[in-house]
Every structure is written in C-alpha cells, then in structure tokens.
Length: 213
Image (tube, rainbow, N blue to C red):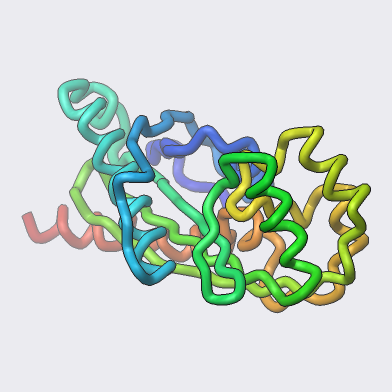
C-alpha cells in the first residue's frame, strides 16, 4: 500500500518485528518509542489491557511532540501507530517473561494447550485528533516442544522481548507449529489487514473533520 507523499507515519514502537512488518506493507515511517511503565497499567481482560497500553503509548509520544508543531505541520496529515500484545494461555494473561524460570514455564505450557495472541493497534491522526483502534486475535497449536529447544531459546534471549516468550517465526519454533487460526503477522504483533483498515479510517475521518471545519 502506498500512501500519498504528504501523509507522514510515525511508528510508536521499538519492536524490530513490527518495523519489519511495516516495511513488508510498503509503508515509509519514522520510529519513536514510548517510555511508559507498562506494569502500572492493569486490566482484567486481555483485550482491554492491550488497548489501554496502546493508548498510553500514543499519549506519551504525543506529549513528547506536542510542542514541536513543525513535526505535525510538515505534512497535511500525520499518523501515529501504536500497538501492544499479550498471550493468553490456559486463562492467564502472559506478558514478556521477566526471568528464565518464567520463560521456561510459559514455553513448556504451549506443549499442553494452545496459545492465543491478543493484540491491539491504534492509529492516531495527529493532525486532526481522530483516533481509530482495533483488536486482533490468533490461536497457535504446537507439537511437543523439546527441552533442548527451550534451553536454546532462553540462552539466546530473544524470548524475553516477546509476549509470552512466543516466537512462532523463530527457526527453532516454526517447525513445531501444528496449526494456526489467524495470520502470522497478527501473532508477530502487527496484523496487516487491521492496520491498513485503521489507517484508512483515520485518514477518511480526518478528511471529513477538515471538510466540516
């Protein structure tokens, strides 16, 4: 998808995976990460938690650039994309593992029962104030995950940057995926179809808001 040259996109994430997905979508963007205390934001439902975190990230980034009017005024419309994801497993919300023991417990559990990813995407039109968000889910069924694979993943350390320590795209993990309900990009933290839909909604609503003003 190619956007008009005068639409500017800021990706509010330091995630290498989300950046790679954005590039796959053919979108040009700048990166600006949010410095928030994610642990201070709690919700009982996974869907509410990820959306609350995506909104908090957007608010933190907007506060940083609010006084830099040239950043927003440099394009007719500027979009900020923020996202968050958790894994729900056996009724529990799993975020990024904090210890080796926790990472091991998370990954071992996926041999018993499927993991469900719950991710939120929020697109905020910084030029108009219009904000559009949505939640996407996917479910992953695994074969038995060998202990040597778990040890290798923990030693490598990448699992500590992924919700639930879940890395379906990892070469050690992908052969162990038995079935998936949903899309790989959703599991990896940025569902393409939802993101593009929200971008279009934020732009369309922005145009309508400007036309009425």
